[in-house]
Length: 120
Image (cartoon, rainbow, N blue to C red; front, side):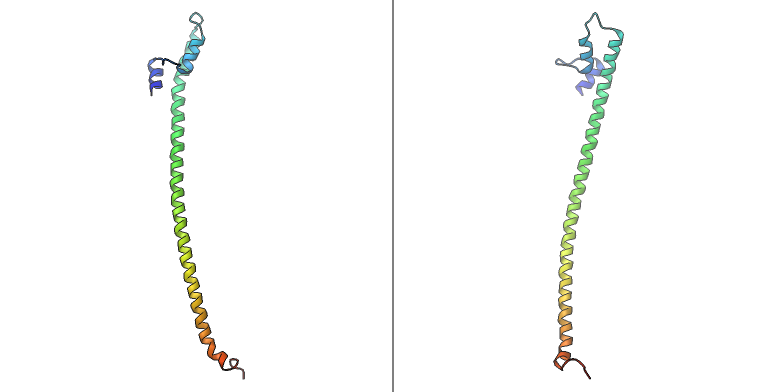
């Protein structure tokens, strides 16, 4: 924010000042032309805008990362819930299969004991 104020109001920081100060400092006072001054002002005007754009890009990237991390956490929780449900259903299916086998054996036992099950 300080750099934006300095660029807007013309203040200069003690140790630098960005592209505008560098452009002005590189020219001697006697060599400073209107074009160089205009270039320095244009560079100073662009720098805060570019910095703001970069901050906005970083903010958007950070927001996207937070959203993706949250979606990942939800997806992992859903996957765990689904795995538990699959294990429960697999156990239920195995229990039903065991019950079917035992009932089938119970129905077949009398036929097998009689001697081969209905041969005439």
